[in-house]
Image 1 (tube, helix red, strand yellow):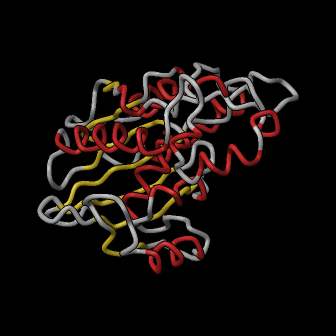
Image 2: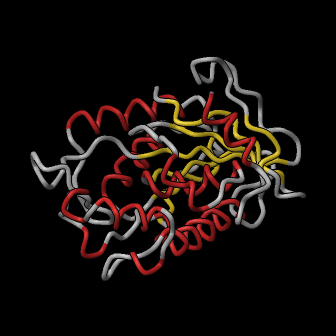
Length: 247
């Protein structure tokens, strides 16, 4: 709740283009969507799902892996199934995914549980929803990269972009383009879902909250959590219904 209220106070300082946040809504004090209104007239809805827990390729070393295709852990698969089960009560027009296997697993589980005649029946894969490319930093810990280098990277200092990797501003451009393509495929009054990654979900949520790109890294998004955002088809304004809810 504090994070959402903090984001509202910061609204107006955003360096993002439309859509801007109209308001941010958490359904109850715990952030649990105990009741969720139908998609309002003139709006489209997106459910943003982060993939489940992965098997860290560094073993005991907590390394960055970015857009490497790492596998879900047993717990991660169970988390993804729980998220898919939650979404089974929502009739989704489209189910989209990052091309990475940890996201595709979750998207397939969502599809399996869509049973309405007009529900999604195939997975849409968008390169733009791929996780942040960490380049030469993949396989390294934060300590090995350096605290100062990470601080500069999070502050969007382009000179701190890892060799062969990408910056947050570059990530924002491709994620928002992919999101807009998904919204175009979603009819007004309908909902769709995208299963992707931490940084990708942060981009879409921060854009909806009107946060500057330099604040992106501070958003907390749990594994296999769900964020719900409604988009006004006329004005581009957005309403965050709930964020990082973990079924």
